Length: 476
Length: 83
Image (tube, rainbow over all chains, first blue to last red; front, side, top):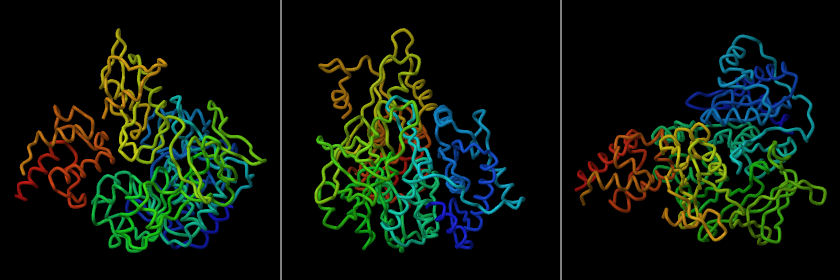
């Protein structure tokens, strides 16, 4: 169970580095005090209602996750860069009873970082303990893009978390320092989080400001000495731009775990050239199945193929294909469902086990899964999952917008490089491009902001629907 | 090979799909996400293809990528020292 893993890790590695971010290092003993202080506050609220963890890579995010997992309190990780409108919506949708972090936008009670620091410094915070819970209880709620414009909350149970942790442990094996790139609000981060706990390894988290400044970023990478890294393929592409991203910079780097979007063969090939002997794990899975359910160890020969396999199903999970090729995920990793108002009709029971229709198309060969596309208008941009309808519906909510269509621009290999929104303003009360941008920014995270184009009208196809093929053609 | 400020701005406007770059070369590119990580990759690839300059991001002060103007200045200077 994840609680045993956490408590064991905190106890046995007291003086070893636990969490490093922005040049600050916390030993497991220190982390334990933060976890204890936050758990004390959680237990004061006896409700076990979901708690929002608000911030980016600060210590209260890491300690907050552990404290919630130990206390049977579902946590909702939300990045501080998200616009206030969306955060407020998430608080309402998840019925959040308390926010941990420096959030000042509402009526919900807040445990600030200052209060946490004070509790850690002054009081003798009790040692963390594990509170009883059942396997079906919700461990965390992750918000993803919903096609209606409302964020979609996925409820993941302790059963799924435990199953995921067991799998990661055998998949990756021993590690001393795990590099984190993803925000905690992006469930790719559960991989580096659990991996570090399973082995009492250091968790080295890159901050957003470090991801943009190459000199700072590369000095952090060097400083990390990481032997294991979890990242999106887009981030690897960015790092590969610089020749010094190689085994001299990260001499111990032995494994990179990829998930979140398609890994291109050329990216894998270049990594193998820069890091001789590196193990590249290409994983696949939606948030609805606890971040990942398949993994493939990419070989040199694979990199000559037009696309890479995503591998075999993890233990506790079976993959089946529907007659049209849609990937069906069955077993322990399948989430409990969505928070209302979303229908959980994609979740069902198959042979007595939970199952989820992923919306991804694929084919199997000798037990290995290969992906080939999507059923709907969900896309991946730099690893982020985005429903085009989410952007369109938020545009339509703006006063002065008559019609809107969002079209992805793709490279030859199918990878989406940008999104363009074609907006038709109302004739009577038109809205300007600047106004649209300004207002949309209060609803959508930066990674979802499309390029804007004002149009007189949207082209229609034979069915009277917006002809997106035509719009896409206009773009390129 | 010579490169003008106009060449660089036009290339940037095309990559970032932002015509504002042409009229406001002092606009902020990074915090506004106009030059996001994917357009950054495209930009460095284009600079390599069109001007034969392979930019190593760690060898450049990141402030260079803050505005279209500063990118143009940097590229023009690089090409002058090369020739």
